[in-house]
Image 1 (cartoon, rainbow, N blue to C red):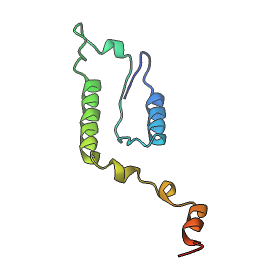
Image 2 (image 1 turned 90 degrees about the vertical axis):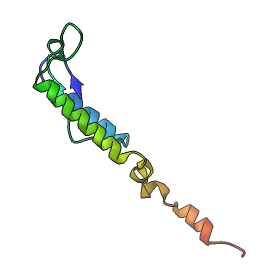
Image 3 (image 1 turned 30 degrees about the vertical axis):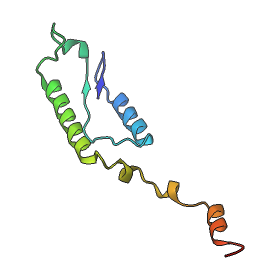
Image 4 (image 1 turned 120 degrees about the horizontal axis):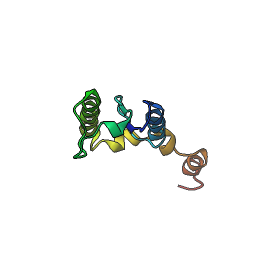
Amino acid sequence: MQVCGGSQSFNTVNQLRILGRWLRMLTIPNQSSVPKAFMEFDENDRMKPSPFYDRIVDVMEELVKFTLLVRERSDLLTDRYSERKESAEDVSKRVNQRAI
């Protein structure tokens, strides 16, 4: 989610999505951007009812749903063949035993 003081831009959101994937974070399909965010809040610092507010609620609902789906499953989602396979040297040490 992005809040910007100027015009609407998803560049920050897209860069965060890329960074999150590199860090092996699950990124949800939904995203939102709030242009001129300073105009979207009332005197009590609450966001005013608007399509932007509705969109943020949509994004947060999806985040909660994805969190519930993947909770307790991080081992399965982060297990990588390339990280658990033995190196050629380790295999050689294991199978080329000099004595039984």
